[in-house]
Length: 329
Length: 284
Image 1 (cartoon, each protein chain N blue to C red):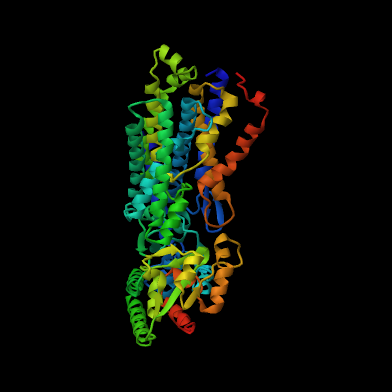
Image 2: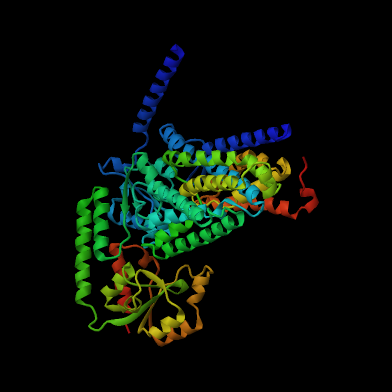
């Protein structure tokens, strides 16, 4: 990364931190947004148990989605790649829905995210079983798309058999993503999966750069494309699976963030990973604060707002003359 | 070192003061009458709380409870502050007990428990026994077991009266809901149809819980009575358009029909039995 790139990345990190601070400061009550913490008797619980987990998860989940989006777009050299592509998201959603359906969600709400994590890992295991032997990219993508569709279909099937029509409604909302009323327990649940996922993606950075020259050239440079492939696929499944397991499917962040950053940070995949983490966190946190600033009413779902916020930027990028979108530095 | 110590002391003092402030913070009237204060965050829980608890115990009910399309007790619910079921807003009410549904707001319920609140979860009501059980649970949770027992006794007496006056020959019936949805077995609406002395054609065809019924399948099943349940008729939706299908309207003209508001089918309450009397009035 150039010096300018480092400066820009630091600026993104500062913005993300500011958005996290805003997330701590803004609450929501029956009458709409609440600035500050309310009475002194409530402040400790509201800050530590309600808003802190929400801000932390916004940071972790948004960052993960941005990071994985950048890594996958680099790996597949395809601008449409996004974290949901490999089946990890829909596998996690299916696992969570199953837990819900069998009524295990009960008082120990960790059963729900744990089911999500199990679903994501199962999707990854299935992907490896289907495509691991061959290890060529096309097989992995196609198997991932098939698994994605299968998990989505199974989720719909489970919804059809849900014991209560309200359960079906709840699951549907849950699949649009939300950070509302998560607790620190969820933060501790996702971290042990996200951190190894991030490390795997960081370890793939050099391989991703080499892959931009093509598989054969990368191999001639002494890099094993299959190693890069499985680092990215495994890291994404772990990190995104954990994210989806506690927040539901938050769309658009992983797709749009790398595109927004490419004009600023260039096209080298490794230079895009860290900025995408911060920008993903920023977009998610801003969306989550915006949710709380809406007029009184039931909360909007996070996935709806990230798309509403991200789409105009994305369209602006797409509509610009192609020449102007070439790398600047 | 001494600064650190002093600041620790200051922190302890602050915590103690906060705790004290909490104790003296305005407590709602419920505390005076020695019964727990209650907040509910689910439409069905709201209506049970409104039915069972003393009005002074109720701090807040969910916003759906005040919507006449959803709730049988909308007028009553509108007298209370309405919540949207988030943990932060409930904290501001500081209820002694939170009544919730077993399938809604899983994360909120877990967080409230973590914060030390007593959370009572209600399973959806399918049978009259389920209604009685939930009435007893809410009554026990709000410290009015005698009120609960009286409500249950009245409910059971009413069921006995309805069973005694059931028509001798069951009438073939289909419930038509927006989107062509109908109601099968294992469902509150089915329980109410049985009590009214009707035969639920969809259930006899093997449908359990909820399901969709195409207009064609509905016509072929040739029911004697159509129970029409609109939902937000004035708001456009594809689901409501099904209710205006010409073939369905023609079928409705040839048969006995009765309209039951959607709110009767959603939650099992002692008041749900009013729907049985509505249904009986529509008998051919």
